[in-house]
Length: 246
Length: 226
Image (cartoon, rainbow over all chains, first blue to last red):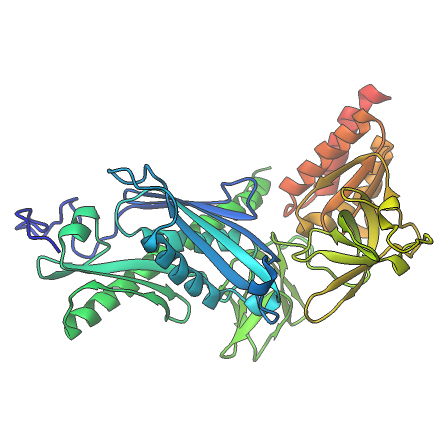
């Protein structure tokens, strides 16, 4: 992590974008936005703009990757070349392969894969604009898209990050906070059971700081989970609401 | 279920407890509580809780009539896409024609549509379909449109009331496959009208009094036809 002169938290305890230490950035979620996908979601989380599309369940090809007992989940996380300030070299790189893998494994845990032997559920996560926390935002969007695709699942997965800046534990790091801060802890949970689906850490935290950051991130996840559920309900409740007006 | 509002549920939503209720289709049980496993409409029949899916792939059931599109002709069978997660196998013994070895392409080839019946579904979800039943045939002419398989019951209506209504006003031959594919044959105007009606049904699938509104729509347009 870099040394810099920028004060990430001012004397009044506000962060660079005016948030308090335990505030999330603004989140907007819309489901069922892509016509050709089985399920889809568009999500804006601070400066992140992300589309998630779900295809399937469908037969997994090539055949050797099929599991005769359950479905496999193939998530593909991709950042657009124009999603960051300096152009990103397009195509999969080490970072996006890693994120695809951890997201696939997180989603596999909540989808009822045993109902679809030999099949695959494909999830494409496309990052159009990135501003720190894209893996959390991508996983959150994928959760909504899976529900929209009508895929049977135990829970709607949700993710959120906590971190450490200026020796203080804060929720949902922004871009500068991520670059100049001391630690970043993205987690994904199953909000019904509290089960952890994904946990990564960058930087250093003491044992106490870790526990504090973890609890804060879990609290953040529950807030985001409510936004997710509202977005899904809003999309499908509108059909019922239209009828009441008639 | 009279005029009780249709309630939409989302996965992980708690629906009841196993002490008082039973878990039906589209639900799962965790520590004595019943949860919805998918996006759908809540349906309580007696003390059994079901979730009827709102979206999602067609789940093949033995005996369903489906519309399939041939993907591949092999020497003794065809692979047919029936909109399910897996392709369905149609064996030469399951067609009404005498077929010489490796002559399958003469009868059905890639892209041909058929009206078929689901013959078997095994535990690893391997599908077989058959053409050996009454009213099953290779489709020639007409249009095939696709809808969500979950709205098929609404398109058919109670005891076929909705589909009979559409047929009456448009004079088209219509066949609704359980897999969400609909075959329409008739004159161009009739087909356009059927499509319009089906789009309306699909958009308003969870509302009440739909049959009446569809009749209104069909009557309005039928005036200039008659």
